[in-house]
Amino acid sequence: MSSTGRFVWFDHLARDVEKARDFYTHVVGWGTEAWGGGTEPYTMWTAGGRPVGGLVKLPAEMEAAGIPPHWFAHVVVEDVDAAARRAEELGGRVVSPPADIPEVGRYAVVADPQGASVSLYRPREGGTPPPAGVPGTFGWHELHTTDHGDAWRFYSALLGWEHAGTMDMGSMGSYLTFRHPDDGGDAMLGGMFDAARTTGQPPHWLHYVTVDDVDAAVGRVRERGGVVQHGPMEVPGGGRMAQCLDSQDGPFALYSPPAAA
Image 1: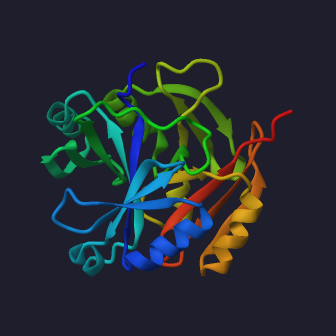
Image 2: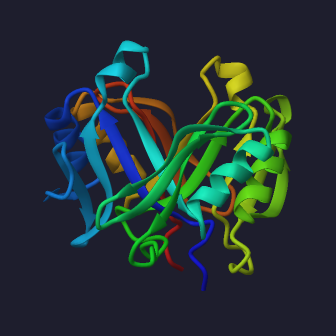
């Protein structure tokens, strides 16, 4: 099964690294592990002893530009340089040109035509994502944009995603779901809709981390100074979700699958 087109790593950029570590280990239950391969301090998040992402300080230039703490995802591609060129051909923009991470892999940051950013990543040693549905892993990826039709044109051509379905959300418009071409049945990677039109936020990706119990987790969000913006609520197909801000106003979301019959 190909990893191309799959989300495999998630970095959190925080103003206060220790505060972020305390928040997410308490809310999600992640462990942490120091990584010594870079020039700046970098902490890995672990679920069941397996790394799923990282934590790093928000760069001063981003903070000066008014960019808040946020999560940032890496998607596997076969050839980073070719994919970055293709992103430009499709109307996107290269934010950070292709570069190597010693002993890890190669990446480039691109923005889609509406401005949401993602990393195109080629790991040195494969890049198999953690099993879906395991607590502490990211299981849903949602693009909040201003033109989901044009965004879909961009991502489907760039990453090979397939259209899985479209739901009518009434006054909120249509919600397009997508899947990886290797996945069959009802398996899906995420969705996209025109949420940024109504919220006034810049287009961005929102990533959902799996927890055993969303209702219990939102209690921990509040205990550590976070904010629950939407939910907890039921989602189509079963399960519950909540959209939140962490203790430094970084957006993230929680999801718990339906209970086994």
